Image (tube, rainbow, N blue to C red; front, side):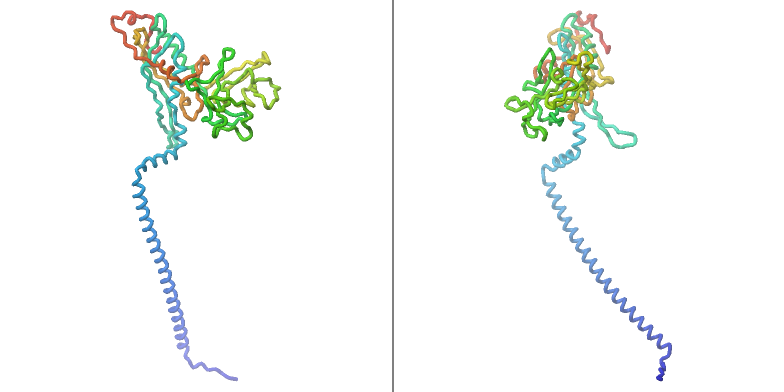
Amino acid sequence: MAREINLVPDIKNEMIKTLKLRNYIFFACIVIAAASAGVTFIFGVIAGGQELARNNRQASLVLFHDKLNSYSDLKDTITIRNQVADIGTLSSSKQVLSRSFNALTVMLPQGADTIQISRLDISLVPSTAESSESSDEEEIIIDPTFRLEAQANAGREPFIDYNVLDSFKKTMEYLRFDYGTYVDKAGNAIPAYCMIEQGQDGSTFKEVRDKKDYYYAYWTINASGCNPSDDLKSDDYQIEDYEGKEVVKVWRTPQFDTWYKGEDFNSEEEPYMALDGQIYNIAHFNSDCITYTGDNSENDAAPKWNDDNVCNLISTENGISIDESSNGRNDDNELVLRFTATIRFNPEFFLFRNHHMMAKAPSGRYNVTDSYVQVQEMFGKRAKDCSKNDADCVNNNKNKTGDN
């Protein structure tokens, strides 16, 4: 049996192990250093590439900035962009100044008593206020206001009569307006630009039957974007010709006498108006102000129709105030009552988003024209103060001054 004899001392074995460990560590350090150098080189390349790309981008931005600023229409372009971004807010607050004449038409008396305006200041400028205590947002507040100087003429003795002005003031609470949407037979809204509501002379279309006025508009049914809804055709309507255009007459005022046919009416083709005011099978006007109801408790064949209009033209709170009044003479040397007044309107009347607006007088008289002649008659030269030796004017005891 062979025997092995270890002639190397134990300390020598420990030294050999230590040298091997040192070599391993040294080799590992070399590998790690090489790897670190490689990673550093890669990061350097990336950083250098990013810096180069950033410099190129910055140079491009500077070039684009200079080119952009060279455009003469830059400011207008930026303004349009901002307006497009705020188009919703702008549309909700946009107002229609021309409706001022609509309002004046029903406000001013018709007949022997006349009121002519010598100066009219209109304020439609919206103001802003915080919407709530807990919110920093602002809401638009519109307070349409007319401030006018005018003269009232009774048209008969004693001419200067405060009753004309007093009647003018009291009429304000009964003024109404109406707006809404025209719809086809299926109840789908007809775009506003498809409707013709006034003739060339500015008069509203109407028919008079049994001493009643029935108002209507024309729908340009075959114009671009004005066609009926998909489930209907132009053949489903009675087409007329108006100034070379194919149109359909759409009633703004319900035809109570022809549309109502009783509660048991089942036709899906003939026009029908129920007692609750709902209208079927015909293009018509859906009012956002007026609710129609019928009562046939006395006579089933001819129900009595009522309309409830909730849209006040003049503000219900402090709508009109007479600031001053005095005797005077107009340009024809007639005795008149001069006065100044402040009138506050319902903001809804002037808002652009409320389409097909129409003002209504207490008697049911609509604003039927915006013609130049009628507007011209609303205004007149400012009346003169009474001279000291004008006894008829100064001593007229039929007149009261002040806000009565």
